Length: 66
Length: 170
Image 1 (cartoon, each protein chain N blue to C red):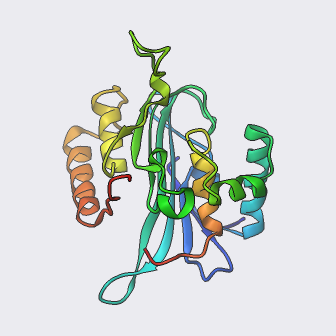
Image 2 (tube, rainbow over the protein chains, first blue to last red; image 1 turned 90 degrees about the horizontal axis):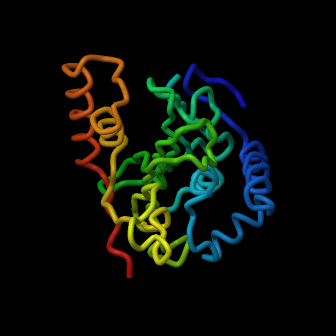
């Protein structure tokens, strides 16, 4: 992570994946990769306990037109 | 310490996320009553009608909680918003914008646990969440009413002018 200013930081995609993997394993016992696959496949019926992780995962997605 | 913005290198800096202080995305923000507001917002730089680009909120969570753990078991209420639920989860109702309240139904808790109920909402601003905390949860403001009230109102008006609203779930 690179500090740009007191409240702005830059991270690499690998750093994001590492955080996701650590949290997914701690909370759900699955890898970050498996969590994202389940989400993209529509297999997660309720994101209440992991919404923060799914938001973080948006950093890895290319913006798509609405 | 307030929230911080994290941007991702490499993808032409077109994705960003607002999270906890010091770049700690999952770290809740400590409030003046020693409780916490857990804020996460993802942003994508997207084209807009008429040309140009604008940062748009893709997902957001505002969660009021008693401890400083992102996966808190001691949350009071939380709001979740997903901009494009159909693209990521089949459009199921659970991904429509909603509010969860921690507690128990007095008469039907066994049938419908209150914690699991997703009360449908429209877009909820972080300004309205802050106002709720000050006026209903008695979180002390760090400035006088004459300062924070107009500031929140002005910022929330700007949000309402451009806020995207999801269609109803199908």
